[in-house]
Length: 372
Image (tube, rainbow, N blue to C red; front, side):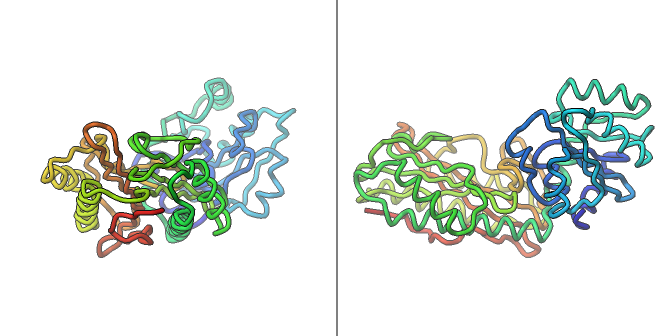
């Protein structure tokens, strides 16, 4: 296992009083081994995978035998325990792994939200003296601070998302459909090196206020706001970044709203540093909007970003997490007009650095983009 990721997991075990962590979800198995297992990505639920790590730093990968050749080529974990998906009981194999690691009576943190109920019942019968704990919080804690390798993948994903949006802008004009622009973003993202395009949201006019719009055949009109939000994956790590633009000609109301959003984002960036709190960021957001009689479109400002789109820490009214160097956020001070006719999407992907903040999505300037 990557030494820095292993260190994060050992720190999490110490913090939560665990002797071992067992990952089952697609993202936490990938966190341990360094790549997405195809069978998990395809959601073949009858194939069970797991990565077990103990406090001594030993790590073992449970996998189906058909995935072994690729694991031998790509996995950071080198102790493989393959099983025949049609003949073997994966929970019996997993219990054997835990026993071999000295955990027959250990305090083991499992991803309780990712292990199916039927397999959980079987696992308990194979290892009756173990102490089972919910390890979800330990995994969330471990993944909050990213390693240099994780940051490099996130930077690449963010750069691709920026470039794909910018190049799709060249095709915007009155009468073009949301779906046509969607296809341009996807094509450019793949050409620039994205491993996968998870989703691209394109929504014009009143649909620009939607939280998660699906691109359709709607044709863009002059003076309309258009939202683009782009999620691409590089090495398992994701971007979540977007911008609004206006088709044809922008009104003064639109320009003013965008300028105030940019002022808000700049104030948030200036507050980001190790030792600050998610509560501080939320308050800056609310106060700056309030200065202009603007209201947040949702009681939410941002979230951690990595192998999942939404990770800890979250930035919202109810959170108070201290920022650390190496944390990554998608920050989105979303605004919509009170009549719900226009929505303005602005989302940066940033890294908390030792001196402040690195904006990974800095391709676009602060001015409102007007196209076509």
